[in-house]
Image (cartoon, rainbow over all chains, first blue to last red; front, side, top):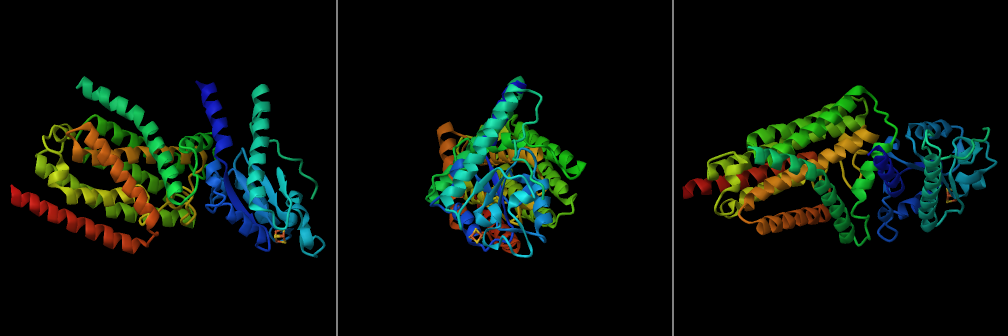
Length: 167
Length: 284
Ligand code: SF4
């Protein structure tokens, strides 16, 4: 019975990724593309994706924009509030590396300087299709880590997030 | 007695599945009305199982306790309904669930949760009088508050109290968290003051409240079924039409303020039901 429940939970984890979106100083180009995914044309709800407002209820964190010294604590705080299993997706050139702002005096760099990132979505801004695909790739990663933890029981079922580089 | 107990237990066992399925169909039909493809019908179950598997992280013990008590209140109300108990008893037990949900939300400092809880209280202020008036109307007509007696009626109650059914429909819209009355919390992908009264419930606690909501939906649809107790087919058609109209209203109306809700829901509900009650009285 217990085993069955775990199977259902894993199934649910793959089919109901709720996303929370954090704008880390983006120019709003990426944010508009993220919101574009919610429109009837792209309809992310068919994958069970819902945009929620509370990081504690979310499974996937979408970050757009460059991380700077002011908002890196906020980003870390939001990431820490999310519960396992969770995934992080960095969106746009800014989220990947700092983009065109990379050498500005206030810029820390990409999202992965502060929190571990699972999927990177390049583009300035990326297409909505790419963003939806990124969520599905993150789910694929999650699935692989779930299968690995099934083989080696006793392990935490959290997704194997990327190594955290030294800030 | 034993048969009633059996009905109660079977009803309670089936209700969560029924409620989840209704929620899934609701989301699918809503999506189709907005010309979207929509999630799978089983989506609400995936959501709940996923939430059960999240690491628990309630802010305080009250939230956990309140989510358990809210679920138990809803489950008990559904059990009593299928047990064919007294309508008034069901009404009081039904309130327990909503009250504990509010108490949990009030126990944290988050302003979103606080505002959501206050709004939930206002919603209760709007729908509880309406439901009790409907029960009084039913008792006037059938001479009893017992569901067993009401199900044994010869003619459908809808013929003699159509306006009271409309009143119940208004209460149903509020209880289902549907527009224009979805002010305390929102469903589907909508957001209102983050998640309103549900904001601070996370992981397993949120899953429990979700199941409690399914049970509430089954209970309210059960109350609607009292209006066509003579044939199973008629009852099913009535429930399908009612629920479809709820989804339609949800999709064609905007979310409005709590003042509007209190005025319109209470005023229209009370006028409709008083007219219906006078009519019943005159016919007697
Ligand atoms: S990647 Fe381009 S569109 Fe996105 S935030 Fe940066 S500058 Fe704006």
